[in-house]
Image (tube, rainbow, N blue to C red):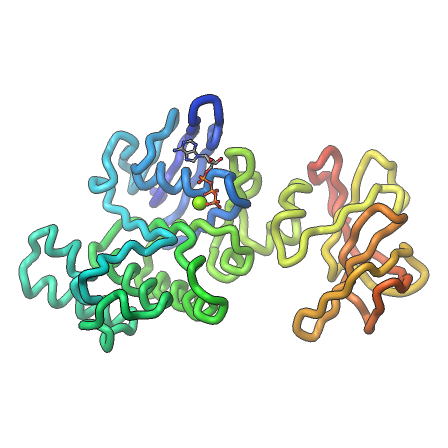
Length: 328
Ligand SMILES: Nc1ncnc2c1ncn2[C@@H]1O[C@H](COP(=O)(O)OP(=O)(O)OP(=O)(O)O)[C@@H](O)[C@H]1O
Ligand SMILES: [Mg+2]
């Protein structure tokens, strides 16, 4: 039995279709990431799973039970949003125990659960601090701790790290993964951040035009996008595309390639270096081919803007009408 099953979900606002006939199964213990650009319906989809929004059509099944008609508090889910929404006039500990007090658990049971959560999230020292006086990363841990004490069946997280600075974000990401693995819980996590998707997800679903355009591991999506759109969206760099004629194919197809599928040097496809970007020890050249087509290639050696260079393709994908038709 899947932990979460979405069947034929559609959500419209007036004339606008935000989610269209979307289906998905998320397995027990899985870290599933919903990835997509702004405005593609990621939050809407998560809110439907949570019960905050009602689907226009379709069903939400959690632990084999149809919860489509149930309100959020009857679904046994924990939702953590981008703005952590902690109670500002309470301490860290009071925030965490609040949902348990609402459930009228015994004092001992509450103490034990809160202690465990404080330990798991390594915030014992902050227990009596006001939540207005802790850092963004610490707030996130408190929000997660508060979500966990209720023993939810499913965790739903909507860009929970997006308020954090780059360093804290990196640490918080690692911590989130550790916590998910320790708890052996199922997470559905919304982000538009490639790095988060790459490091956290067991599987990623790329949301586009109300549907998952592709579902798979991050590597599958980055290495073998089934559409040109996925190729351009997923990965540290967008995939580059050229007309088929560059490799002797007909011009009705396009070839797509990642920067590191290329060997720079003659003889090859000529291009003009328009900008250079260094990432770690690697150099990437942003070039134009035939004055028009833009490509990104990993450089062999230092290159200057305005120089000409050439590259060969070690491998590439062939797309017709924006859809993958073969791998070469
Ligand atoms: N209550 C609403 N009424 C009307 N339209 C809405 C409503 N909520 C969302 N939308 C529209 O639905 C679309 C999807 O919104 P949603 O918030 O789900 O996107 P998102 O993928 O989460 O974007 P972001 O990455 O910016 O958070 C948007 O075009 C938005 O304007
Ligand atoms: Mg959103």
